[in-house]
Length: 392
Image (tube, one colour):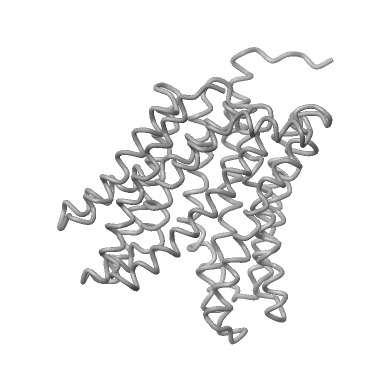
């Protein structure tokens, strides 16, 4: 019989596990960020059209549509092992792209990386909640910071690797992903294999019933994601294009994107931590109001005021993610991975559709007008927020 750890030791062990899985998030997403920097090299090697090159990014994101299926399986079968295996599998798929012999092989590797990424992101927040104790918001923030940092260091890592070993030598980075999986296995070996035993909360009929009971919550979640998609997704996709259309230099546009990312990291950390103190609903309501306002301030600002508005936009537009993840784990405790999968699917669909809409609006009315329209559309999600006050 295992001896119970003192409260202080249990707290330290929980903190260590949160740090380890946040580090796992960093290294996992570092590999998925490799595609964009090496895409010019892949285009040259395989003589790809831009459409074919862009389709690789679509293939990596397409498995997000299967997130609810992955979540349902994780709730009923194995929760931790798919999280543990994902960094190694993603590392292998991404690092072997330089060794692919044809476009079909390249597309297959991109698809494998996309499936592996979905299998990591759907159940990982459930593991965070399992060890977070009374501060799930702060734990989710640290987890999300790992993901945000990965998009900062990933391009630097892959470009250094390509310069040292060429594109075909990226396989030398695979051991880092395998080591991440081994560390996750060591850290979470004492957790239950699955969230719930088969035949209880994981049954499909019970999941469908729980979704029906939480329909107001998912309607509110849809509204929150409408606000986020028309702000965060559009700004992340078109900020350099918007600034260069305004006459700014490409260097300034790139620097602005880095500043936005840095502010997003700070905002993600602060929002999750504050949600433990003042509540997830209050934070989400505040962010959903301030984000459209900050986007409008950015559009109508210039000089130093433009930089200040950009920082405010970064602090608010991307900060709802850890709060949403924490709220999902609180409200949907009977089927947490399935609920998180549904959130990921809705987020992917809304984000993709709003970026396509913003591109079409930019072609028709100009990108400045498109930004103004998107800032107004982000307010459409506010009425849905009041559904958060509906009881379970």
